[in-house]
Structure formats: C-alpha cells, structure tokens
Image 1 (cartoon, rainbow, N blue to C red):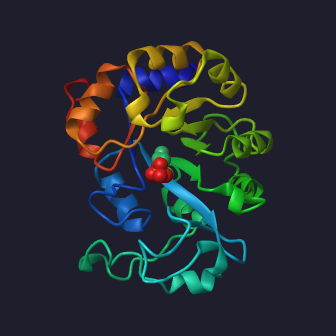
Image 2: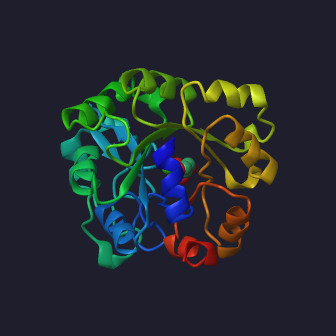
Length: 257
Ligand code: G3P
Ligand code: CA
C-alpha cells in the first residue's frame, strides 16, 4: 500500500467524479468525463453494463428510459441500436447527440489521463461480464499492480470475488448501501480478503466506521456527495476519497488546496 499512502499524503482526499462531472454534463458520456478532466478530478466513476450482443457500454440505469431517447432494457438492444440513441438532450440541448460510450472507448480515451473507477452495474443481469471487463484490461496490459489508476467495484460482492480471481493485481471495491449501516468487523474482514476499498453510502459513514475500515487495510470512498457541507463532513472523518457529482466541492475544502 506504499504508493497509495503517498498518493493520499500528497493529494489529500481523492476526488472522484461520479458518472463523470455529472452535475455539469450528462452522466456517463464523454462530455461528462471530459468535464471531470477539465476540473482536475482524480478519477471518473463509470457504470458498466452489457448489450444484447455482449458489448460493454457506460450507462447507469438498467433501462434506457431516463438518460436516452430510447425505451426498454439495456440488455435487449445491440450496440448498433444503442449507438443511435441521444444520451445528452435529456440533460440540456447543448448536449444533443452525445452517444452512450463503449467501455473500451472510455478506457482508451482516459487511461493514464485520469483514474477510472469502474462499477459493474447489476452484473447478475449480464453473465460473464467480469470476464469481458478483464479481457479489455488484459488486452491493454492493464492488469498489473499500480501501473494505472484503475479500480473495479460493485454492489454485487460475489461479482467482485469473481473479478478479483481474474484480475488479482487490480484493486477492487465493495459498494455498500444503507442496509450495511450495521456492518460488523467480521464482515469487513471478509471483504478485505478480496477488496481494497469499502465504498459506502455517505449516510452510514461515521468516524468509527472509517477507523474500522482502515483497521482492515481497506480505503473508504463514500458516495454520492451533492452538497458542500457533506463534502466537508466527510473530509473531517478522514475518508480517502469522495465520490461526487460536483468535483468543485472537494477542491474547495481548505485541506485539499
Ligand atoms: O460509485 C458509487 C455510486 O456510483 C454508487 O451508486 O447508483 O450512483 O451507481 P450509483
Ligand atoms: Ca455508479
């Protein structure tokens, strides 16, 4: 963990742009990822799912309805069908024509420029998605320890165990929603057997939880900050990173200037 500790000391809290800088541009589009780079975030967070013809794409919801002009389940459409959709207009007319990016496009455009926090979204709907993601990284020689700022995370912890077997040197994270408010030290120790990060809903984060996560050797990146006061609260709790729609809230804090 030596490099990670140096990183924390030099950089302060990692600034993770949730679905890209999603307060400023449509989530999970190149526009949002570009904005995150412009704002000097440390990572972009992306949600990865799979099309009917088994291509990996970046989209959050399991349906197309909210963020595109399409209707229906992501997994019922081919990449060709997905590519004609408008993933920008719902957010603002100036983003009309933004496409849903493929996972490979995001990796190729941003590796080495900004860290990439890869969330496998609802992987139980996409059997084999862990292997597809691993193939993309291995094809690019990105499976080695610390040579890229790449982290893989999911709410599906079985999926993370599968992924860790395929990519033992890539850091993994377990996401934890509100139902994990009472997470025990035994459960944290079990997560730490395959995960490097415990990334909880910010509403369950206390100084005591941060200390217990750190005691296992894991880092903690809470999600999803949308107000300055919450960023400030988390800073004071000694978290390692903050997942936010507003990268400017993390940099505004005196500790990160
Ligand atoms: O990175 C964590 C956060 O993205 C998890 O929640 O629903 O925004 O994917 P969600
Ligand atoms: Ca996510």
